[in-house]
Length: 457
Ligand SMILES: *Cc1c(COP(=O)(O)O)cnc(C)c1O
Image (cartoon, rainbow, N blue to C red; front, top):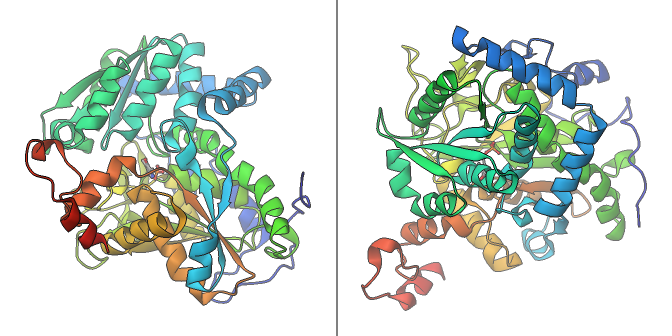
């Protein structure tokens, strides 16, 4: 059953050309983050109004208590196994790897989780905390609706009241997810202020929390927000990487591949970065394994120099957003700038503070993939492997497709396939100018399926 066990990292392990000199000491300093007040190097921390200090302190104490509590951990694992369907498999994308003619590409199948993405892992952990803290009311904010759906799902599962804030513009754009949340019993509140999108929903959720802090738990959907959220969300999501550490040696052994020297692990781990939770989840357990490259893929939108992207780590500057210090996309006056991505889940002007630290320390690399590249990768994975990926995840797949041909066939890349693409087929059909997919707006009109298929060929 089990392959060779993962050996500890070799301190004299191979240094990679072009990468910063990275010692065990700096690795451990990175792995041990954050400090007691939530700082990842100069990033993170807790920038909140006085009205929230009590709530945040309560949460910090609750998490400190249950983080290493055996009964809590046992129940969390049980939920992941029986409600989510974990462990998710690792799949060898054999046809795609063969076509590209380089490194073997492996996919961590978070798309097979209940609700179709990684977000549910974290939401279960936070909902379990809410129960133990005696908070019967859950609030969340959502942009594309994926985090809202995961939260509504868990609230139904645990019998908790659920209120989801969503920009009015997003409510219109994401009507299937809005309906899903309502089916699950959640109240969806359209936010009419500002640009009527995610950041306005965030402000409204904060306002609700301040008002109802006694009975309300705020579930944040990524590794952002004030301490302890970035650490806590990372810990809940790191089940992804922990499974990979066990699964990869077996996968590589099956194919007779050497893996990355003594570690029997992939040469690189690749994940898309919006707020950064699926990436932190798969990266975290790999941080001490110095020979494994960690590559985060940001949305380069219409190009990194176009001004229309969401690449906070590559094009942003340090500043404070959503209760923590991190890289953010801002103009010279410190105003948050408009972001753009083909995928709603990557369309965020900040990034989790731990990624900012991983970038500065050199342990992880961050690259950009454009809308067009992500869309091409989306179609390619559909056609070569029979898997429809989320547009977010397609960014990571696209970078693997760029990197693989530069490597040897006995090397390997592990891609976090963070979610499935069912939610995106309307967007893809629009971009392919395909009328094959009948959107609500085209109901009753003729559907030109042949034209659509032709545009895909
Ligand atoms: C929300 C989402 C993302 C982006 O969020 P992270 O916190 O960066 O992981 C990526 N992929 C999918 C499928 C998502 O739903």
